[in-house]
Length: 294
Image (cartoon, rainbow, N blue to C red; front, side, top):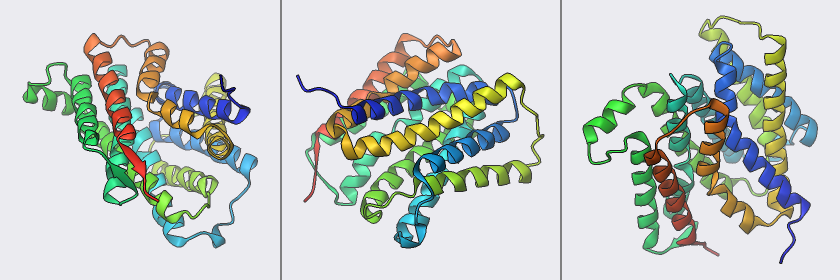
């Protein structure tokens, strides 16, 4: 049996951190102003990843990657985490998390259109399964379209942010492959995200609520872990078992749902878990139905 090396374990630990992120961010944003919480978290994330990786030499990077992909990265982080922060209850957090995890099959579809992947017809089946899974998560009675829209209208802003974020992250993944040319500007992207969140906080005139001592600890730990996760992920992609890591990412919908259930003390219905499995299965079928073009 092949032994898993240290860098693969680092990559798997990053996946576990990301799976817990949705629930932890929700708990923090319930205690202080939402955008302020995100700005504080990402400030520590930026400091952590800059400390671990240093400031990238952005002058040497392709402009399309730096500014184009950078804009997609910043917008995704802000939109997705804002959707979590502005969810009305913990059940909505679970739905938002599942909307976000449409990005793996969407990435495959976009990569096909970008002619980065060759594909088999089963990729269509995988995408349909993922969509049906999401519909079941939102509304167990998937044939009742009116009920589906009624659920989405309970918090249209948060759900729209999550869906737009999934599309943006898919575009980021495809365009990064095309334009990055081996460069990694993630520390710079994090710094810009933190600055943008502070700008939104002040422009929106959101009240500044001083966190308690315990909440400061949660903010520092969460922000640092996010920075560490991204730093470790980059190392694992270079030196770890890439096939195992990619496969593990496709199980993130299930893992994230389990972590959210435990952390937020939520009790989703059976239909939610069936939908989650369908989203995961659909993403895996999409992945298995494609191959990189050479």
